[in-house]
Length: 547
Image (cartoon, rainbow, N blue to C red; front, side, top):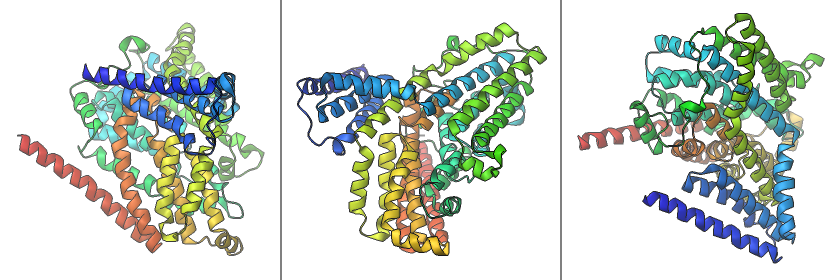
């Protein structure tokens, strides 16, 4: 009861803040200098803070959007009409009608339809039964999820939704909480893509520095991308060790007793389409393989592979949104033909699955829409420019640059919910600082170690902030893939992400001092395992003292 009162009071306080902003806007009292200032960070802070306090993601994101619209309108003396234009026309309508965003939404809906088809055909049930026979433990189920996440490295959106749909039956059988599944999905999406040379992420990074071979630069950053590497090590360690801590501990303890969700916000049985009882493993495996092949083909097609480009260059130049939407639609048509030939489902059942699949993805679509709109607010308020100005002024001691860039990238990515936008802002700052060094690198082909380390720190921090942020596309997709309450996913994975981030900060401090990859990796890995074993020891000691 006290918690409910606290949440209610928090909502009232934030709503009062919004009302005050509206009044200020309506009387046309402009907030002088709000654009490109600390005000620009208020909308995401309001949205994220409110979501973590109230556990209500939709209202929290919407209030964050309204906050951004009010601040921008007040800053530009737009009045009440300005708020409506910014929030509705430029924000919600602009983002829903954006070509790239529409492609992602199409991919999301089509994947939801394919998952429902596999469930109705009995493929998910059959795969779950097969997995129980071959996977003998919770550790095996967790590690299988990790391996599949590593294998699907071409795109983080595709990774999140595919791994979730395939592994949910398996992790459910072994009573792994949905929050834990969402963490495994999220931790093997962006962290894997950012160290995979053939991925949509490699394409984004390789084009940020002019005058240098983009792919070579990207590959050189991999050993120094501490957050990605250490996150994968931590996930592997956690698969085989019971050391859950923070809110995740309660979720896992409840899951072992049969409650996979912990909170009332769960996927109810009546909301889930009926699962077929007469299906085979092939009814899940083949649709997934078809989906992977079609989506990869679609991506390299948009990159010019069939026009003569190499496979690597095709990935580097691909349009992920168009490629994924086109590939998924082709895959859906082939899957429908397959089930018609198999006579597993009737045509009527398949058409019902289209509606059911769309319904399954409505929560993710709503969250994505609000998140994209909130990002538009931060862009209008020039949050990136404000942060980049702070970084440029702070970059005086070169040995401290890696850790400074890492921390700033975390904050910027967390607040804006975009890792691509974050390293797109910070990497040009690095190139400006090291312009003389990069001019020499363009002639010799050798990129200075400190430049590589600083760019790696930007990438690692961007992925870390993206991993933690409630308004990140990847975080939202991971929740959708695991069918986990979004706020539960965010709150349970934060302690894990912060653990790795703390170790990385020390690692980048060492990197700035030594500029030796072997020393940096050795110190970082040893420190990470020291922290994890320390947590495990403290948990055992606490358990013994209670006994």
